[in-house]
Image (cartoon, rainbow, N blue to C red; front, side, top):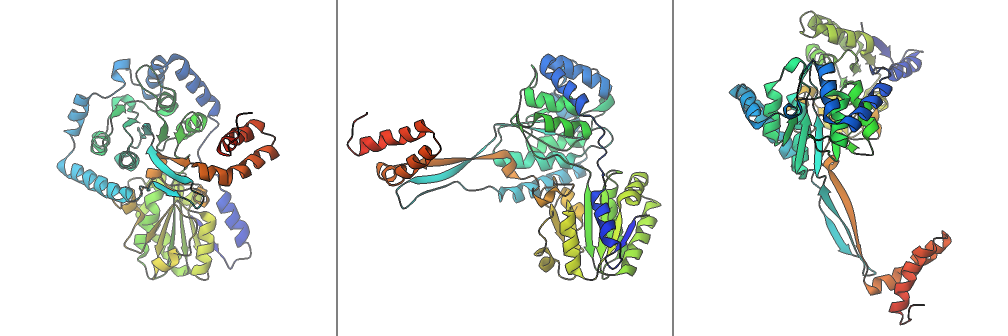
Length: 437
Protein backbone atom coordinates (compact mmCIF):
# COMPACT_ATOMS: atom_id res chain seq x y z
CA UNK A 1 0.00 0.00 0.00
CA UNK A 2 1.53 3.36 -1.02
CA UNK A 3 1.51 6.53 1.06
CA UNK A 4 -1.70 8.53 0.65
CA UNK A 5 -1.43 12.28 1.28
CA UNK A 6 -3.83 15.19 0.87
CA UNK A 7 -2.77 18.82 1.02
CA UNK A 8 -5.92 19.57 3.01
CA UNK A 9 -4.87 17.32 5.90
CA UNK A 10 -3.46 19.01 9.00
CA UNK A 11 -0.37 16.82 9.03
CA UNK A 12 0.30 17.09 5.29
CA UNK A 13 3.47 19.19 5.49
CA UNK A 14 5.10 16.93 8.06
CA UNK A 15 4.23 13.81 6.06
CA UNK A 16 5.39 15.40 2.80
CA UNK A 17 8.73 16.39 4.29
CA UNK A 18 9.09 12.84 5.59
CA UNK A 19 8.39 11.51 2.10
CA UNK A 20 11.04 13.79 0.61
CA UNK A 21 13.57 12.78 3.24
CA UNK A 22 13.17 9.04 2.79
CA UNK A 23 16.54 7.41 2.27
CA UNK A 24 16.01 5.25 -0.79
CA UNK A 25 19.60 4.64 -1.77
CA UNK A 26 20.55 1.08 -0.97
CA UNK A 27 24.12 2.12 -0.31
CA UNK A 28 25.83 0.44 2.62
CA UNK A 29 29.13 1.86 3.74
CA UNK A 30 31.21 0.57 0.86
CA UNK A 31 33.62 3.47 0.54
CA UNK A 32 36.42 1.78 2.50
CA UNK A 33 36.07 -1.34 0.34
CA UNK A 34 36.12 0.74 -2.82
CA UNK A 35 39.16 2.68 -1.63
CA UNK A 36 41.02 -0.62 -1.26
CA UNK A 37 39.94 -1.82 -4.70
CA UNK A 38 41.09 1.40 -6.36
CA UNK A 39 44.44 1.29 -4.56
CA UNK A 40 44.90 -2.33 -5.61
CA UNK A 41 44.16 -1.59 -9.28
CA UNK A 42 46.53 1.39 -9.22
CA UNK A 43 49.27 -0.76 -7.72
CA UNK A 44 48.85 -4.02 -9.62
CA UNK A 45 46.92 -3.08 -12.75
CA UNK A 46 45.69 -6.00 -14.82
CA UNK A 47 46.48 -8.56 -12.12
CA UNK A 48 44.17 -6.81 -9.65
CA UNK A 49 41.41 -6.45 -12.24
CA UNK A 50 41.64 -10.13 -13.14
CA UNK A 51 41.52 -11.28 -9.51
CA UNK A 52 38.57 -9.03 -8.67
CA UNK A 53 36.70 -10.17 -11.79
CA UNK A 54 37.21 -13.79 -10.74
CA UNK A 55 36.03 -12.96 -7.21
CA UNK A 56 32.95 -10.88 -7.98
CA UNK A 57 31.90 -12.10 -11.43
CA UNK A 58 33.06 -15.71 -11.07
CA UNK A 59 34.88 -15.30 -14.37
CA UNK A 60 38.44 -16.47 -14.95
CA UNK A 61 40.17 -14.32 -17.53
CA UNK A 62 43.68 -13.59 -18.75
CA UNK A 63 44.87 -10.10 -19.62
CA UNK A 64 44.39 -10.70 -23.34
CA UNK A 65 40.81 -11.80 -22.65
CA UNK A 66 39.73 -8.60 -20.90
CA UNK A 67 38.72 -6.99 -24.17
CA UNK A 68 36.20 -8.43 -26.58
CA UNK A 69 37.84 -9.08 -29.92
CA UNK A 70 36.24 -7.85 -33.11
CA UNK A 71 35.50 -11.47 -34.04
CA UNK A 72 33.73 -12.05 -30.72
CA UNK A 73 31.66 -8.93 -31.22
CA UNK A 74 30.78 -10.14 -34.72
CA UNK A 75 29.65 -13.50 -33.34
CA UNK A 76 27.46 -11.99 -30.64
CA UNK A 77 25.96 -9.41 -33.02
CA UNK A 78 25.04 -12.26 -35.36
CA UNK A 79 22.80 -13.60 -32.58
CA UNK A 80 20.67 -10.44 -32.56
CA UNK A 81 17.40 -10.75 -34.44
CA UNK A 82 16.75 -8.38 -37.36
CA UNK A 83 13.83 -6.92 -35.43
CA UNK A 84 15.94 -6.12 -32.37
CA UNK A 85 18.70 -4.67 -34.52
CA UNK A 86 16.19 -2.46 -36.33
CA UNK A 87 14.83 -1.21 -33.00
CA UNK A 88 18.34 -0.36 -31.78
CA UNK A 89 19.16 1.40 -35.05
CA UNK A 90 15.97 3.45 -34.88
CA UNK A 91 16.77 4.43 -31.30
CA UNK A 92 20.35 5.36 -32.22
CA UNK A 93 19.18 7.49 -35.14
CA UNK A 94 16.69 9.39 -33.03
CA UNK A 95 19.16 9.88 -30.16
CA UNK A 96 21.80 11.10 -32.62
CA UNK A 97 19.42 13.53 -34.35
CA UNK A 98 18.41 15.02 -31.01
CA UNK A 99 21.93 15.39 -29.66
CA UNK A 100 23.36 16.88 -32.87
CA UNK A 101 21.15 19.88 -32.17
CA UNK A 102 22.80 20.33 -28.76
CA UNK A 103 26.22 21.04 -30.26
CA UNK A 104 27.24 24.57 -29.23
CA UNK A 105 28.86 27.06 -31.56
CA UNK A 106 32.32 28.54 -31.26
CA UNK A 107 32.23 32.30 -31.03
CA UNK A 108 34.75 35.11 -31.50
CA UNK A 109 34.33 38.90 -31.66
CA UNK A 110 36.20 42.18 -31.28
CA UNK A 111 35.02 44.51 -28.55
CA UNK A 112 34.95 48.31 -28.44
CA UNK A 113 38.52 48.48 -27.09
CA UNK A 114 39.89 46.38 -29.94
CA UNK A 115 40.35 43.17 -27.94
CA UNK A 116 39.46 39.92 -29.69
CA UNK A 117 37.57 37.57 -27.38
CA UNK A 118 35.70 34.33 -27.68
CA UNK A 119 35.56 30.65 -26.93
CA UNK A 120 36.11 27.33 -28.64
CA UNK A 121 34.57 23.92 -27.86
CA UNK A 122 36.66 20.75 -28.11
CA UNK A 123 35.82 17.15 -27.13
CA UNK A 124 37.55 15.11 -24.47
CA UNK A 125 40.06 12.79 -26.14
CA UNK A 126 38.80 9.57 -24.52
CA UNK A 127 35.68 8.58 -22.60
CA UNK A 128 34.80 5.46 -20.65
CA UNK A 129 31.22 4.30 -20.33
CA UNK A 130 30.07 1.99 -17.57
CA UNK A 131 27.27 -0.38 -18.58
CA UNK A 132 25.53 -2.36 -15.81
CA UNK A 133 25.55 -6.13 -16.12
CA UNK A 134 24.37 -9.12 -14.19
CA UNK A 135 20.74 -9.02 -13.04
CA UNK A 136 19.84 -6.42 -15.64
CA UNK A 137 21.71 -5.25 -18.73
CA UNK A 138 20.69 -2.18 -20.66
CA UNK A 139 21.62 -1.81 -24.34
CA UNK A 140 19.63 1.43 -24.27
CA UNK A 141 22.16 2.86 -21.80
CA UNK A 142 24.96 2.09 -24.25
CA UNK A 143 23.24 4.21 -26.88
CA UNK A 144 22.36 7.01 -24.46
CA UNK A 145 25.99 7.34 -23.34
CA UNK A 146 27.92 6.49 -26.48
CA UNK A 147 25.93 8.37 -29.12
CA UNK A 148 26.30 11.82 -27.49
CA UNK A 149 30.02 11.15 -26.99
CA UNK A 150 30.48 10.37 -30.65
CA UNK A 151 28.37 13.38 -31.67
CA UNK A 152 30.65 15.52 -29.52
CA UNK A 153 33.66 14.17 -31.43
CA UNK A 154 35.27 11.90 -28.81
CA UNK A 155 37.94 9.96 -30.69
CA UNK A 156 38.31 6.98 -28.33
CA UNK A 157 35.29 5.45 -26.67
CA UNK A 158 35.65 2.47 -24.31
CA UNK A 159 32.91 0.67 -22.41
CA UNK A 160 33.09 -1.76 -19.52
CA UNK A 161 30.30 -4.26 -19.06
CA UNK A 162 30.47 -7.02 -16.43
CA UNK A 163 29.61 -10.53 -17.64
CA UNK A 164 29.02 -12.58 -14.47
CA UNK A 165 29.62 -16.29 -15.06
CA UNK A 166 30.57 -15.36 -18.62
CA UNK A 167 26.99 -14.51 -19.63
CA UNK A 168 26.94 -11.88 -22.39
CA UNK A 169 23.95 -9.94 -23.67
CA UNK A 170 24.38 -9.73 -27.46
CA UNK A 171 22.14 -6.65 -27.58
CA UNK A 172 24.68 -4.70 -25.51
CA UNK A 173 27.45 -5.49 -27.98
CA UNK A 174 25.20 -4.70 -30.91
CA UNK A 175 24.31 -1.33 -29.36
CA UNK A 176 28.01 -0.63 -28.85
CA UNK A 177 28.74 -1.41 -32.48
CA UNK A 178 25.89 0.74 -33.75
CA UNK A 179 27.02 3.63 -31.57
CA UNK A 180 30.62 3.42 -32.75
CA UNK A 181 32.26 2.23 -29.53
CA UNK A 182 35.96 1.50 -30.05
CA UNK A 183 36.76 -0.85 -27.14
CA UNK A 184 34.61 -3.19 -25.04
CA UNK A 185 35.90 -4.75 -21.82
CA UNK A 186 34.16 -7.56 -19.91
CA UNK A 187 34.75 -6.12 -16.44
CA UNK A 188 32.61 -4.27 -13.93
CA UNK A 189 32.40 -2.87 -10.43
CA UNK A 190 34.78 -0.44 -8.76
CA UNK A 191 37.70 -2.20 -10.46
CA UNK A 192 36.37 -1.17 -13.88
CA UNK A 193 36.07 2.46 -12.79
CA UNK A 194 39.62 2.36 -11.38
CA UNK A 195 40.98 0.82 -14.58
CA UNK A 196 39.30 3.48 -16.72
CA UNK A 197 40.53 6.29 -14.48
CA UNK A 198 44.13 5.21 -13.87
CA UNK A 199 44.76 2.75 -16.65
CA UNK A 200 46.43 -0.66 -16.65
CA UNK A 201 48.80 -2.34 -19.08
CA UNK A 202 45.79 -3.50 -21.12
CA UNK A 203 43.33 -0.65 -20.56
CA UNK A 204 44.41 2.89 -21.38
CA UNK A 205 43.03 5.61 -19.08
CA UNK A 206 40.22 7.93 -20.18
CA UNK A 207 39.36 11.55 -19.47
CA UNK A 208 35.67 11.20 -18.61
CA UNK A 209 33.58 8.36 -17.14
CA UNK A 210 29.82 8.20 -17.52
CA UNK A 211 27.13 5.62 -16.93
CA UNK A 212 25.09 4.20 -14.04
CA UNK A 213 26.04 1.44 -11.62
CA UNK A 214 25.54 0.01 -8.15
CA UNK A 215 26.74 1.44 -4.83
CA UNK A 216 30.31 0.25 -5.47
CA UNK A 217 30.39 1.93 -8.87
CA UNK A 218 28.94 5.16 -7.46
CA UNK A 219 31.50 5.21 -4.64
CA UNK A 220 34.31 4.58 -7.12
CA UNK A 221 33.15 7.43 -9.36
CA UNK A 222 33.18 9.75 -6.36
CA UNK A 223 36.73 8.70 -5.52
CA UNK A 224 38.22 9.07 -9.01
CA UNK A 225 36.54 12.43 -9.68
CA UNK A 226 39.29 14.96 -10.15
CA UNK A 227 41.57 12.46 -11.80
CA UNK A 228 38.85 12.14 -14.44
CA UNK A 229 35.54 13.84 -15.01
CA UNK A 230 32.28 12.04 -14.25
CA UNK A 231 28.71 12.63 -15.34
CA UNK A 232 26.84 12.33 -12.03
CA UNK A 233 26.24 10.03 -9.08
CA UNK A 234 23.01 8.29 -10.03
CA UNK A 235 20.59 7.01 -7.41
CA UNK A 236 17.45 4.86 -7.69
CA UNK A 237 15.06 5.78 -10.47
CA UNK A 238 11.98 7.91 -9.86
CA UNK A 239 8.87 9.13 -11.62
CA UNK A 240 6.29 11.74 -10.70
CA UNK A 241 3.02 11.90 -12.63
CA UNK A 242 0.71 14.91 -12.46
CA UNK A 243 -2.65 13.73 -13.77
CA UNK A 244 -6.23 14.97 -13.79
CA UNK A 245 -9.27 12.73 -13.77
CA UNK A 246 -9.54 12.70 -17.57
CA UNK A 247 -7.04 9.85 -17.85
CA UNK A 248 -7.19 6.09 -17.98
CA UNK A 249 -6.19 4.90 -14.46
CA UNK A 250 -4.51 1.83 -15.92
CA UNK A 251 -2.28 3.94 -18.17
CA UNK A 252 -1.08 5.92 -15.18
CA UNK A 253 -0.66 2.71 -13.17
CA UNK A 254 1.68 1.13 -15.71
CA UNK A 255 3.61 4.40 -16.01
CA UNK A 256 4.20 4.32 -12.25
CA UNK A 257 5.22 0.68 -12.41
CA UNK A 258 7.62 1.36 -15.28
CA UNK A 259 9.98 2.89 -12.75
CA UNK A 260 9.03 0.77 -9.73
CA UNK A 261 10.11 -2.37 -11.59
CA UNK A 262 13.68 -1.06 -11.88
CA UNK A 263 14.58 -1.36 -8.24
CA UNK A 264 13.03 -1.90 -4.82
CA UNK A 265 14.39 1.54 -3.94
CA UNK A 266 12.79 3.28 -6.93
CA UNK A 267 10.01 5.79 -6.26
CA UNK A 268 6.74 6.34 -8.12
CA UNK A 269 4.47 9.24 -7.15
CA UNK A 270 1.10 10.40 -8.46
CA UNK A 271 -0.15 13.92 -7.84
CA UNK A 272 -3.78 14.40 -8.82
CA UNK A 273 -6.56 16.89 -8.35
CA UNK A 274 -9.13 14.12 -7.91
CA UNK A 275 -9.10 11.77 -4.90
CA UNK A 276 -11.36 9.21 -6.60
CA UNK A 277 -9.00 9.08 -9.58
CA UNK A 278 -6.04 8.60 -7.22
CA UNK A 279 -7.80 5.65 -5.61
CA UNK A 280 -8.61 4.22 -9.03
CA UNK A 281 -4.96 4.40 -10.05
CA UNK A 282 -3.88 2.68 -6.82
CA UNK A 283 -6.39 -0.08 -7.52
CA UNK A 284 -5.09 -0.40 -11.08
CA UNK A 285 -1.55 -0.75 -9.73
CA UNK A 286 -2.68 -3.56 -7.44
CA UNK A 287 -4.28 -5.30 -10.41
CA UNK A 288 -1.13 -4.96 -12.51
CA UNK A 289 1.03 -6.28 -9.69
CA UNK A 290 -0.85 -9.57 -9.85
CA UNK A 291 0.74 -10.39 -13.21
CA UNK A 292 3.76 -8.12 -13.66
CA UNK A 293 6.91 -10.14 -14.29
CA UNK A 294 8.94 -8.07 -11.83
CA UNK A 295 6.05 -7.77 -9.38
CA UNK A 296 8.13 -8.53 -6.29
CA UNK A 297 10.53 -5.66 -7.00
CA UNK A 298 7.82 -3.27 -8.20
CA UNK A 299 5.49 -4.18 -5.33
CA UNK A 300 8.10 -3.45 -2.68
CA UNK A 301 9.04 -0.15 -4.32
CA UNK A 302 5.37 0.90 -4.46
CA UNK A 303 4.65 -0.16 -0.90
CA UNK A 304 7.74 1.44 0.63
CA UNK A 305 8.20 4.59 -1.43
CA UNK A 306 5.14 5.02 -3.65
CA UNK A 307 2.70 7.84 -2.99
CA UNK A 308 -0.63 9.26 -4.12
CA UNK A 309 -0.98 12.95 -3.32
CA UNK A 310 -4.27 14.82 -3.71
CA UNK A 311 -4.02 18.57 -4.34
CA UNK A 312 -6.57 21.38 -4.65
CA UNK A 313 -5.40 22.49 -8.08
CA UNK A 314 -2.57 22.21 -10.58
CA UNK A 315 -0.76 25.20 -9.12
CA UNK A 316 -0.34 23.22 -5.90
CA UNK A 317 0.84 20.28 -7.99
CA UNK A 318 3.56 22.43 -9.58
CA UNK A 319 4.81 23.60 -6.18
CA UNK A 320 5.05 20.04 -4.86
CA UNK A 321 6.65 18.78 -8.07
CA UNK A 322 9.39 21.38 -7.85
CA UNK A 323 10.07 20.32 -4.28
CA UNK A 324 10.48 16.75 -5.52
CA UNK A 325 12.60 17.88 -8.51
CA UNK A 326 11.90 14.48 -10.06
CA UNK A 327 14.08 12.59 -12.49
CA UNK A 328 11.06 11.92 -14.72
CA UNK A 329 7.92 14.08 -14.77
CA UNK A 330 4.80 13.19 -16.72
CA UNK A 331 2.15 15.86 -17.24
CA UNK A 332 -1.10 14.07 -18.08
CA UNK A 333 -3.36 17.11 -18.04
CA UNK A 334 -5.49 19.06 -20.51
CA UNK A 335 -2.75 21.57 -21.38
CA UNK A 336 0.61 19.98 -20.57
CA UNK A 337 2.60 22.51 -22.59
CA UNK A 338 1.29 25.42 -20.53
CA UNK A 339 1.80 23.56 -17.25
CA UNK A 340 5.37 22.66 -18.21
CA UNK A 341 6.27 26.34 -18.39
CA UNK A 342 5.57 26.61 -14.67
CA UNK A 343 7.94 23.75 -13.79
CA UNK A 344 11.45 24.76 -12.72
CA UNK A 345 13.01 21.51 -11.55
CA UNK A 346 12.79 18.22 -13.44
CA UNK A 347 15.26 16.00 -15.23
CA UNK A 348 12.91 15.33 -18.14
CA UNK A 349 9.28 16.28 -18.80
CA UNK A 350 6.88 14.11 -20.80
CA UNK A 351 3.98 16.08 -22.20
CA UNK A 352 0.50 14.57 -22.48
CA UNK A 353 -1.16 11.22 -21.96
CA UNK A 354 0.35 9.77 -25.15
CA UNK A 355 3.94 10.41 -24.02
CA UNK A 356 4.77 7.74 -21.45
CA UNK A 357 8.15 8.05 -19.76
CA UNK A 358 9.14 4.69 -21.22
CA UNK A 359 9.27 6.21 -24.72
CA UNK A 360 12.06 8.42 -23.42
CA UNK A 361 14.01 5.44 -22.14
CA UNK A 362 14.42 4.10 -25.64
CA UNK A 363 13.46 5.99 -28.77
CA UNK A 364 12.20 9.46 -27.86
CA UNK A 365 15.51 11.16 -28.57
CA UNK A 366 16.37 13.08 -25.36
CA UNK A 367 18.84 11.39 -23.05
CA UNK A 368 17.59 9.01 -20.36
CA UNK A 369 20.64 9.53 -18.10
CA UNK A 370 19.04 12.01 -15.71
CA UNK A 371 19.60 13.56 -12.27
CA UNK A 372 18.00 11.67 -9.37
CA UNK A 373 17.47 12.26 -5.65
CA UNK A 374 16.28 15.86 -6.14
CA UNK A 375 19.51 16.83 -7.90
CA UNK A 376 17.46 18.19 -10.83
CA UNK A 377 17.35 21.33 -8.66
CA UNK A 378 20.91 22.05 -9.76
CA UNK A 379 21.93 19.67 -12.53
CA UNK A 380 20.89 18.40 -15.94
CA UNK A 381 20.73 15.14 -17.78
CA UNK A 382 23.58 13.79 -19.90
CA UNK A 383 24.23 15.66 -23.14
CA UNK A 384 26.95 16.36 -25.68
CA UNK A 385 28.16 19.09 -23.31
CA UNK A 386 29.33 16.38 -20.91
CA UNK A 387 31.90 15.34 -23.50
CA UNK A 388 33.03 18.85 -24.46
CA UNK A 389 35.23 21.48 -22.85
CA UNK A 390 35.05 25.21 -23.50
CA UNK A 391 38.34 27.03 -23.95
CA UNK A 392 38.24 30.83 -23.76
CA UNK A 393 40.18 32.99 -26.21
CA UNK A 394 41.62 36.48 -25.76
CA UNK A 395 43.88 38.58 -27.97
CA UNK A 396 45.01 42.09 -27.13
CA UNK A 397 46.14 44.59 -29.72
CA UNK A 398 48.49 47.35 -28.58
CA UNK A 399 45.51 49.71 -28.59
CA UNK A 400 43.42 47.34 -26.49
CA UNK A 401 46.21 46.78 -23.97
CA UNK A 402 46.72 50.53 -23.59
CA UNK A 403 42.98 50.93 -23.00
CA UNK A 404 42.42 48.27 -20.37
CA UNK A 405 45.89 47.36 -19.12
CA UNK A 406 46.18 50.11 -16.49
CA UNK A 407 43.03 48.88 -14.74
CA UNK A 408 44.42 45.35 -14.64
CA UNK A 409 47.73 46.65 -13.26
CA UNK A 410 45.92 48.56 -10.54
CA UNK A 411 43.90 45.50 -9.52
CA UNK A 412 47.07 43.39 -9.41
CA UNK A 413 48.67 45.90 -7.05
CA UNK A 414 45.58 45.90 -4.85
CA UNK A 415 46.02 42.14 -4.46
CA UNK A 416 49.78 42.49 -3.75
CA UNK A 417 50.65 40.41 -6.79
CA UNK A 418 53.61 42.41 -8.03
CA UNK A 419 54.66 40.21 -10.95
CA UNK A 420 51.12 40.31 -12.32
CA UNK A 421 51.26 44.07 -12.47
CA UNK A 422 54.82 44.13 -13.84
CA UNK A 423 53.91 41.77 -16.70
CA UNK A 424 51.39 44.37 -17.86
CA UNK A 425 53.52 47.44 -17.03
CA UNK A 426 56.47 46.14 -19.07
CA UNK A 427 54.34 46.08 -22.18
CA UNK A 428 52.66 49.40 -21.48
CA UNK A 429 56.05 51.04 -21.03
CA UNK A 430 57.22 49.68 -24.39
CA UNK A 431 54.05 50.97 -26.03
CA UNK A 432 54.55 54.35 -24.36
CA UNK A 433 58.12 54.59 -25.68
CA UNK A 434 59.83 53.81 -22.39
CA UNK A 435 62.71 51.35 -22.11
CA UNK A 436 62.90 48.33 -19.84
CA UNK A 437 63.71 49.54 -16.38
